[in-house]
Amino acid sequence: VIVGIRDDDMKYVSAACKILTSVLNGKRSTVGKSSRDSLLARLGKSNMEVAYVHVTDKSWIKTKWVGYNVPRAAIVGMQLALTGKMNQTDTDAWLGKDHDSSYWKYLYLTEPDTILQTKNELLPLFQQALDNGLSLFPHRLQPFPHEADLPTNHTVRPGTVLPNVGHFAKITELDTSNGDSCCDGGAEWPGVKDFDSCGNWWYRCGYRHDIGLSSSSLNETYIMDAFKRLVPYPLMRLKDGTGFVFGSTEQGRRCFPSKKGCGGQ
Figure 1 (cartoon, helix red, strand yellow):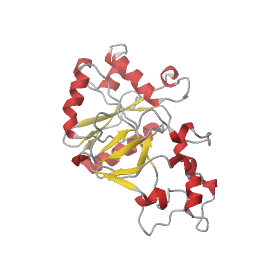
Figure 2 (spheres, helix red, strand yellow; figure 1 turned 180 degrees about the vertical axis):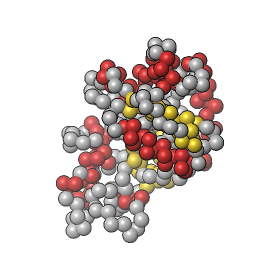
Figure 3 (cartoon, helix red, strand yellow; figure 1 turned 60 degrees about the vertical axis):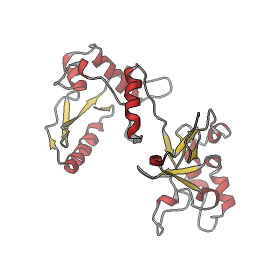
Figure 4 (cartoon, one colour; figure 1 turned 45 degrees about the horizontal axis):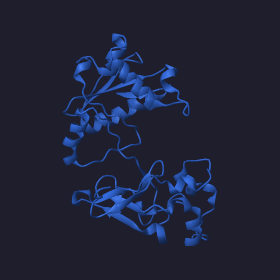
């Protein structure tokens, strides 16, 4: 179920489903006329259904700090559907028409900019934890746009990516199949707590267009100062998956690369 709140969300979701069905050779069904009853596609051989639900109830969306909180709207809607506190039409939009609410045992909440990566051998442990009534929350690793992710002949403007020089050229590759890990660094957020706000996400402060990086000023001292918030974070990439360079969680919590696992951490 894809949850939207803006007037044009349905348009973009429908376009994305067209791409998915063309790639997976699925059969696209007719989009429903009701904003709360829209089966968009059946994808691939698994016959997975993709539906869109449009939320208009502002009490589902607004929180103290965020005016448009889509994850909250998704949680509220799913809870109401699973607990039988919706009318049948709306329940069908959230849960489908083939099964009642008791059929659904596990739920996974994600966002469009999040890619889940884990080890297959951990899945039974996840199931065990969920069956014991726990909720699981993955660490949200934050990519840092880095020059090392670009072709050698790129023409990207300096300053819009982290330059691959000096301190920032030290990138550890982690192979999770060999037991490599990124070990939690504890309750410390060095790129956040030691600096004033720059009016943007903390990790984007060095990428702002007004920092003035140009080919003539591209020296390591200037780079270290411009991206000083990122200096405390060891850079790494995963051998599998996207391979992008990352160095922290979205909120600035560190993890440290290890070739020997994390032990008791």
